[in-house]
Amino acid sequence: MRAAIVTESFLPHMNGVTGSVLQILRHLERHGHEARVYAPAAADMPRMIGHARIEPIPSVALPGYRTVRVGTSSAHRLSGALARFEPDVVHLASPFALGWRGALAAERIGVPAVAAYQTDVAAYAARYGVSLTT
Image (cartoon, rainbow, N blue to C red; front, side):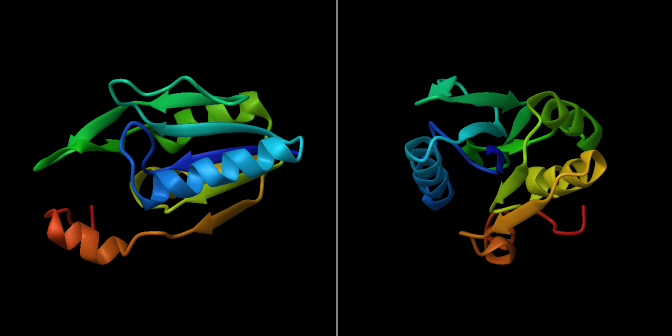
């Protein structure tokens, strides 16, 4: 199986979402599956974790919290990247900004998507002054 993981957060920023993605990668590799991670680009971001390639997505810093990056790629661009990988499933790790575009991209290329939330998105957005309506 080929699994694409679209995540809102990844290394070097360590949090619950990143930890969950790392667990998923270990599980997939242990069972002989291929994975690719699509995550907001950050300085010192690894390019590989085990056998999984990490694809940096253009990003900007979250206002007031520079270590948190928000992916800015369009659904069209992300669907192209996913199509090149040819996944069997797209896993959306705590979908918010990038995850929403990941869901649209998966739909465009006809691949099923699943999502898991590790973050209280509404509380997080309120804390950091990000509008949920943009």
